[in-house]
Image (tube, chains in turn cyan, blue):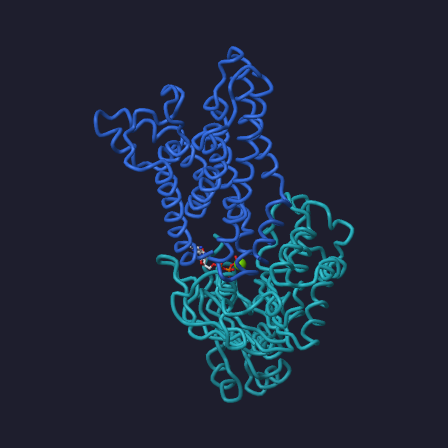
Length: 300
Length: 251
Ligand SMILES: Nc1ncnc2c1ncn2[C@@H]1O[C@H](COP(=O)(O)OP(=O)(O)OP(=O)(O)O)[C@@H](O)[C@H]1O
Ligand SMILES: [Mg+2]
């Protein structure tokens, strides 16, 4: 279990992580979701003791990372696939890691086999494609057969086959009872991978819930209605539904009533309708809506 | 012990230490070969055999040692290291021990290699190592390299990037300390307390031709072994500062 309590990290005036509290439970894949620059990588670096929090605390099963004896046996992490020496072979890279945590050397070949790099084990990591580097990073994370796994955007640079592989792989790890914490800036990706979600924006917590709950909240069905008698219609519908007005085109957005019923109500009250269209919010749209206030870099 | 093994694996699984070792050998022993080849048979001295090892090859060893840490920062493998060994001080001390040991062994090989080559090339010269001072002059090169490696690693940890660390070390060792001697009067007084000048003082042969010996004309306040201890003290002090900084800094 990973527990962050009022975690803060400031770089000069940048508040990379701002009063963030969350819990990551074992036996589940927990997605760490946020737009670019939201502070996901910074948070993960603090979990792993690489960066010191400005304030607050984060522990793994009640201990700071630095207090773990042979930490690779407890926590496996892939923060950046490029953290390898380009002239060092994949096997040597894993070998020094294994030796440092007294992990038997036969485990090196095991994990290379698991990630599908056995054939290039003696090749230099510098010649690897991004996908291969990711696999090597995952091999490193698995080396100590750890209970807790952290992956920072692990599907970056992977082809669809690789993405599917890693998704199933994370599910398997969670099913074995491990804690799996994986970051992404794509909700659509997380929707298929994670069971729980921790959503952040601008370093602050936006939501911590199950993925299912998050999606149903975020993508509620609604109906768009346009009428020359919008004011009157709004009054009547407000009795049995939530009605808001789309500021851009003046259409009414109705939550909580299906389209046929709205049509009937309009007919009963002799109100002319110009549009009556059921809408389903897309996942990405909902996510963007939710994090709009907290997106650091807008495209112009 | 585990950490020493880790650093040894890391060091020898990349190519740069091999290149640096070869270069240091070629420069150190090579310079002696040139000197021996251009000096009349019978005129070679022990002082001349170590010119390459104590000056030229030392610079290469400083660079090699700094590279051992700066490449880790360059490729962020230092983060992978700190993930595997969260006690940063132990990890960095282990690296220092391994690199300093290799540097010291390399120093002995270059020093005695140079001496042996000179003996072969200039058989009429008196190159027998008899006195304690002569032993110190040849065998001391290894000690110098070992301590130099510690100093270079400290600079590497502090600066974190190869170009900066190498520039600092080379300018400091090969230029700055010599140039300070130009300052009238106080120059030589300051030089008596500069680390690499003291390192040279440690190696100096008594009564040798002053022109042959770097650091000639400086009025050292320390004995020759005192100078070595002083050089070592500075290297260790710098390393301690570097370790404290590395511990506090975000990796
Ligand atoms: N070492 C650092 N020094 C200064 N600012 C930093 C540093 N690391 C991160 N930041 C800033 O902190 C904020 C959060 O960055 P972080 O990398 O944690 O975001 P992220 O959620 O991982 O983004 P992405 O999806 O792009 O990977 C950004 O504004 C970034 O510029
Ligand atoms: Mg990131």
